[in-house]
Length: 186
Length: 194
Image (cartoon, rainbow over all chains, first blue to last red; front, side):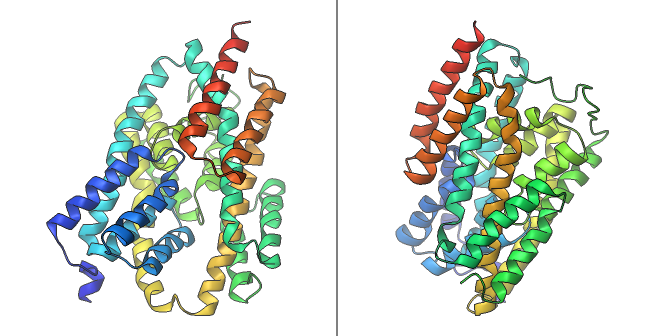
């Protein structure tokens, strides 16, 4: 019970402030999404400080991906496993505050000058990169399951269903969970 | 370039209150297994009609080049543009609060069951579907390249180069965004001047 609320290391101001500062720094480097900072988070909390084991870190990411909501919530699970609810506050605030402040400022700036040629060129030029990054993310997400025919059939099946029908993604995730639970994605 | 957010084109509507923003983001977050992007596109563009596909891609592009979680950035920007900071707070809390609670409960359960093969298998299956959802979202938005000022051929080429650089060659993101993105923006700038 103690570990549930206070994590493996209890509430320690030094740990909490280190988490907040490091995750805050990564937040500003997280171009292309929070998940791109996972390798460095792992290096910091597992390798440098030994606050979590490798397996604990990997499962934190997997849980957040299986749960509903933004993938960035994996930082909350990491924080929780290290220092309980105080750890959640530290990692989540660190991951959100700096980038959120920047995003709001950039959005208002971009809105004001939205008709300027520079802004229009920026959004026209970045649009294809965004699509390319999405495709690359999809491809990279298949990496752990590429040796499995069943799992690799799930990918085009999902694409087809989402593009051709109005089915909610939640049902496709349920299909994936079922297929996997019965050992067809090994 | 598209119209300002919330302008009345093509049957678009805009949220009436911060509560509505909270509820819509709350609902899409709770449907978003394996990432929220696909369901965000469906809810905001196809169901709520708050944004055109081009506007959605524009906000997505900005959310992606800015540091930080893409969906959180998008929620803040969309909420802010419709209803100011109250909208931004409503969107952010709608997006985060319920999923945060769920993920922490799940973490407690998984801590006990992670080693079971059925649980591990289900996670693999869900991972494969998550990959398909991201790819499908990209394909749905690909139509917007037809109206890109660069012309669709050049735009598609930049998309493909990005896919190869990041997905296949695994080059660092920062360099690709600055190098390829800078080239694409410069190309668009030149094309627009004609």
